[in-house]
Length: 92
Image 1 (cartoon, rainbow, N blue to C red):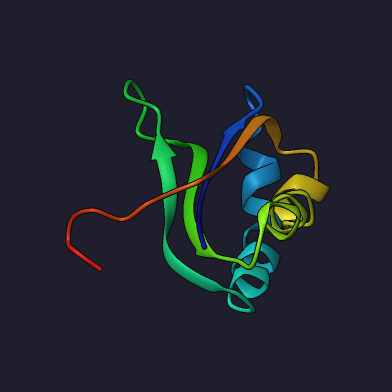
Image 2 (cartoon, helix red, strand yellow; image 1 turned 90 degrees about the vertical axis):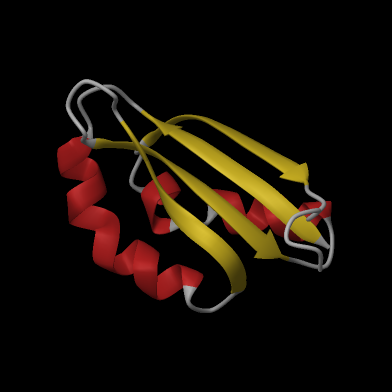
């Protein structure tokens, strides 16, 4: 099943994001990530969150995926949302 994962960064945590970025990218390569990328601060253009669409077997695996992300382990995120997601466009 596909899951939508959204993480909002803590304020002023760009240094944490940059320090954990290589580990984060290596981590997500171990999963069937369909789409991934940062959200951007409208005023500064700085990365301020993460959006991922990932194929995982169930909700427990999706929550484990999110909490074990090196960004999460480094304390980058202020909040997270993990929800089942259905692709409509383009049709799967």
